[in-house]
Amino acid sequence: MTFLGLALSTGLAAAPAVAADPHQGGSATDLGANVVVFTPSMSTADIRARVDAIYAQQSDSEMGTGRYALLFEPGTYGSATDPLDIPVGYYTEVAGLGQDPSAVTINGGVTAIGKNGSGSLDIFWRSVSNLTIHVVPTSDGCHTGNEMWAVSQAAPMRRVDVKDFTTFMPYCESPNYASGGFVADSFLEGGALNGSQQQFYVRNTNLGGGWTNYVWNQVFSGDVNAPAQDFGNGAAYTTLTQTPVSKEKPYVYTDTAGSWNVFVPSVQHDSVGTTWANGHTPGTSIPLSKFFVATPSDSVATINAALARGLNLLLTPGVYDVASPIKVKRPDTVVLGLGMATLTATNGNTVLTTGDVPGIDIAGITVDAGPVSSPVLVQIGSKNGNNGRPHDGASNPVALQDVFFRIGGPHVGKADLALEVNTDHAILDDLWVWRADHGVPGSVGWTVNTSDTGLVVNGDDVTATGLFVEHFQKYNVIWNGNGGKVLFFQNELPYDPPTQADYQHDGVLGYAAFKVADSVRTFEGYGMGSYIYTNVNPDIHVSHAFEVPVNDGVRLHDLLTINLSGPGTIDHVVNDTGGPVSNANKDVASQVVSFP
Image (cartoon, rainbow, N blue to C red; front, side, top):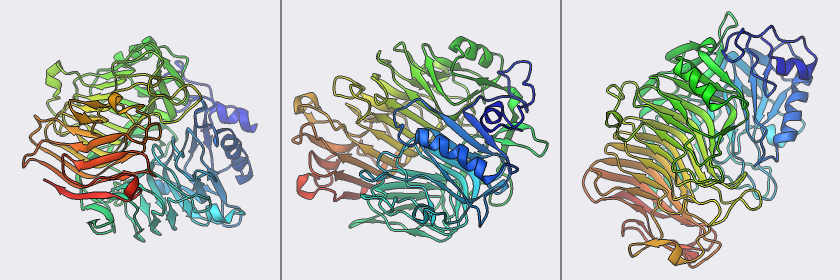
């Protein structure tokens, strides 16, 4: 099927007539000009022209408003003699529309690259998923000699089968730094180069040809052919043979009849390898006709009315001004964003709330604070409703995948708290919660983009797989629930405290990156790092990066702190354990293998 957006841009025949309600999806739904659907019958030259035009617009648009989803119908694209390289810029999603990655093959590459001068430290907000890549070198053989996905935070690779070697390092650029990748449910048949990636999380992936090197914090769970556990004395591999609980991100696909659907993978326990290694991923297929297909012009009242009618929600690419909460109350509701769809609080409000019900899945959205401070941007479950405990939450958990938060950056943003999780058994899979350290002029500063805390977890038995939380002005994370698990945590403390007096409490210098409440009896953390770089005041100290109660039920494994390039000091890693990092030992990790 060809959408109207593609037809207008390529001169092809127009799409079939839309459904009677253009917001209720179906096989003939127009998802708008920013959802571009490619078919195998199109010439490689035509596809390349459209892809390159979007990349030219998005390649440097770090704080812009453009949003795109590039979707490929089942079939083969490019060839050994005429390869297709798909460069991926900001706010661009590249995905196959098959039920499995094998349904779409790209002969060429899907390329995310760094920039000369900064490498890949700011290569955020893009994704690749649900396709197979046969690497074919193009005229720019450097970037496409291997599959190059050289990214930092908020740039996931999911459900991808790479037949050749993969590099997560931008080795063509100088410098070639990178910081913070995420890969899940993939098969990297030729192996992978970590390269300059300071930290990286790989979950439920087959690393066929192995994994090359580490820097500071490389974490693996449920992977095939992962490196062996090796942390301490400078080594930086944390390896769990299984992922205790996971739920893959929902995705759009077309079935053999050409109908459009959203597939919702099932929860997995103690899993190893990909969900699709032995056939279709287990889960449930939902026709697109059961979704309200929203555009940025739709009001919150209209969206909430559709949710109240029992529809799911598909957010097409764009920036949505949200002046009151989107309310998700029905069990098993799916909220799925395409092309990094972005919800912006405009009235000091919460952007999205959920009821105390199981099975809700929220995926693929970015949430921005607005200039009026919000008490919380997203609230999962209520503190008082049903005690925040869905009765069957363990077997049917609430899940968030690829949900990214920003306080400041594209504009002034303020929020007391970005994300509050009150629901038991929730799964948090690839979250970047970011108080901006850079952005458009006037959007960043200690008194400008104000926010105390990135994440508060009140629910019990919550699991985070790939958690990135950075630059908040008090505790970055507060974990109040029992039975929690965190597999991989990456943090930078705020760059910009003006004085120590502005950044201390109760006789403690600074605030811990991760605070496990004194009341917590059970918690486990694996591969957790916190870094300091206080370039506004290089004399800032932080007493401890991690604060936890000392009891046998709270266990931390493979912790580290880093001083980034000089300014600022972390005195201890966890409580009063672990040596300092400062200008005297900059860029060298202080490690604690286990605590207590």
